[in-house]
Length: 196
Image 1 (tube, rainbow, N blue to C red):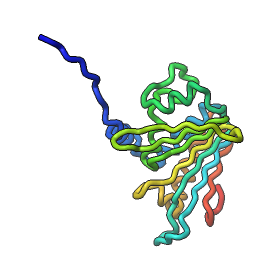
Image 2 (image 1 turned 120 degrees about the vertical axis):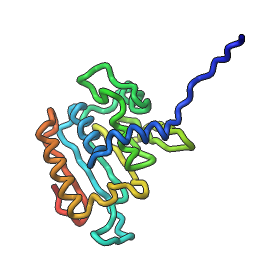
Image 3 (image 1 turned 45 degrees about the vertical axis):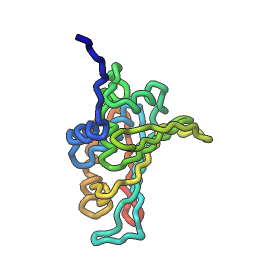
Image 4 (image 1 turned 30 degrees about the horizontal axis):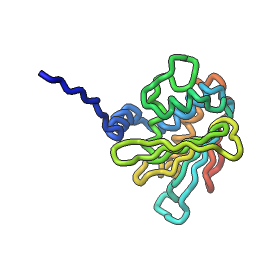
């Protein structure tokens, strides 16, 4: 009998959807990014909700883009490698990305997150049933890390600037400060909304 060897394939998009089911709690992607910033030694996290003023809806304009910045350690080569590999984890329990799945919660918000840190940038994209990452060098280095996410249609985050959701988001962020090791300040900005 002749054996034939064949690699096992993975539908990456379906796998990430299953991972996201574990993170189906309010503001899970923000919780993950704030936790990762804390792991990176950040003292400040800034969250900006960019509104789609051209598409007014009852309750106020929808959020079209979300940015999260921190002043923690810039990404190392190992960080860049891990963030582009689902579930690769981190053997250093004191470092960023212990299990290697939390960052992927952002795919509940966006199809193409972008990260800028140090002198590098990485953008992710859904293509077919897989994910691909695109790498680039930045002309000006970035302190810490910046995450940009254009929200996908139907994302719950589109409603985060509405009064009730904004109040819930503020409470969640304030409670995160209680458990942070290094973060002393989280700012939340949304045009037309009072700052946190």
